[in-house]
Amino acid sequence: MRRDLGRKRSDGHAGIITAGFFGEPRPSTPLRERYNARVRFTTVFFDLDDTIYPASTGLWRAIKNRMNDYIRDRVGIPSAEIGALRERYFLEYGTTLRGLEAHHSVDSADFLAYVHQLPLEEYLAPDPHQRAVISALPVRKLIFTNADSAHAKRVLGMLNLEDCFDGIIDVNALAPYCKPLPQSFEVAMRVAGEMRPSMCAIIDDLPRTTHAARQQGIYAILFGRETAYPDADATLLDWADLPARLG
Ligand SMILES: [Mg+2]
Image (cartoon, rainbow, N blue to C red; front, side, top):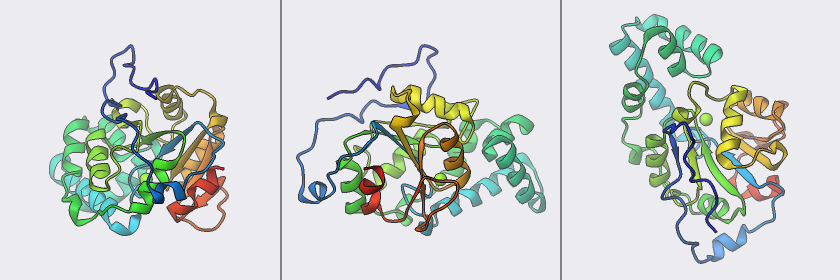
């Protein structure tokens, strides 16, 4: 069934990518049937970096290193000052990029293209169980990321997950906001066509994002931890456990 996710916003905002993600339903596979489950939500938002692929891959660390290179070489900040600067922007603006835009007139497209210029095949490989779990979930599934859709599409392609999602809500779609600002969740729900927070769940590796999502009434799952965590409704380490978390 084609869902009403592909409508262009009236302001013509770029960055919400839905075309090409619908496709025809694929035949069920034994692996997928194993993960078939009822869930109590209509919509699940998936973070990308350090969630759709784990931190152990080293990809996000490599992206952050390229951010440092960019800030040193293109913005002209001395190496010794970059760590503190990024921490400040991360806390004040949500992302390094938003801080660079506000204080250094950095062009977001130039920055995003530079920092994501990495050989993904050296970091990522498909996980058939992750694919089976996500594709079997009977919900609207959207990538919800502070990166851009070009990076998200490359990552999903490398993980063989590109047809598992109904769309990508990227940093351009969220502009001038980004996660974890409350407005970012409003944008995400509007794109999803589900304005009831209680019908939405989010999976993200950052406690500040799960904390903010909970404040909006969204069920928040913290990825990358096994034990309970105060800023999240649940935690997830193994994708096989996701249907139970959402049931
Ligand atoms: Mg993340």
